Amino acid sequence: MAPGAPAMSAPAPPALLEARALSFLRADEPVFGPLDFRLEEGELALVEGDNGSGKTTLLRLLAGLLHVDAGALYWRGAPWRREDNAGEVLLLGHQLGLKGDLSPRENLAVAAGLHGTRSGLDIDGVLDEVGLAGYEDEPVRRLSAGQKKRAALARLLLLPGTLWLLDEPYANLDRAGIALVNRLLERHVEAGGSALVTSHGAVSFHGGQPRRIRLHA
Image (cartoon, rainbow, N blue to C red; front, side, top):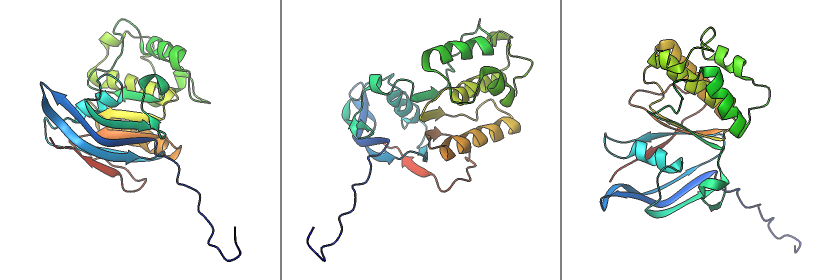
């Protein structure tokens, strides 16, 4: 570099997740898009939109359950492929993905066998943290709706996922459960994780101003 020449700054690292002109069609009609957004590591984003605007569809698409119709997705700067981030992207949707005949402990053991666990966490510890102490071995089908949601939250807490996709995570929870969701979100983001959240209610998040992603067809 010549004397007196300005120092060149290092290029900014790629976003954890980036959408460029992303669209989804149903029966050739747009559900949402074109949509552009970036999500960095350690960032929370709220997905906003009217009923039917495609909030759930977007999360299902990012979870690899639907195909991209138009536009592009990038994961850490590379073209998005579901097989490249399996285990790093965790969805908590209206269908909780729990096997009703298995207990919370057994459900979590199956998930941990597939994806591993976060350092320092174990199944009994996370079940206790979400308020399921005493229900660890009860078949999930016998649990209340709120207890089932807590079991699904325990899975999020246990697995080493980077990106959480939470579709109406406060549904079926009492005030203590809502506070639990907010606490888990803040801890996840503070540890460098990221989350996309849809909610008809206000999200209480004290870790800075969340990014907002507005959907429209």
